[in-house]
Image 1 (cartoon, rainbow, N blue to C red):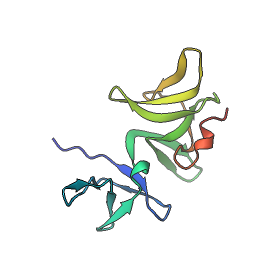
Image 2 (cartoon, helix red, strand yellow):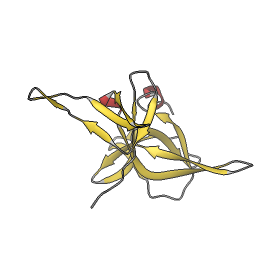
Image 3 (cartoon, helix red, strand yellow):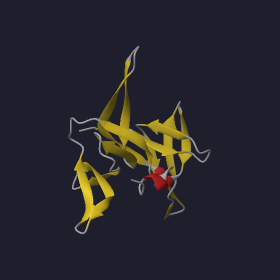
Image 4 (tube, rainbow, N blue to C red):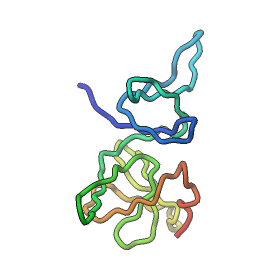
Length: 136
């Protein structure tokens, strides 16, 4: 069975790119390098391995006066739900995508399952904006 998974990563030029084809851990001289390449526009582009994010399958509808568009929710994206101010970072846990917040109580962090119909607001990406994770 073949799966099509969309990935995004940041290039060394500080630009985000997306692709369904990646190449990681290239073998050379019997060593494994942590190089990461995404295939975009008929060529392999080298990216920063620590910025690799997987598409969650969740889309966020946006309503505009002239058209209906959407955003894609990726791993490490920062979002809030409904009118609440708690911010969550998208992570994989037990084979499902969830949002994890550091704004939890004494029992640990809050967790939010992404199978909701509530309005989600996207605030950015934790890789580019780590300061957004800790603001209320």
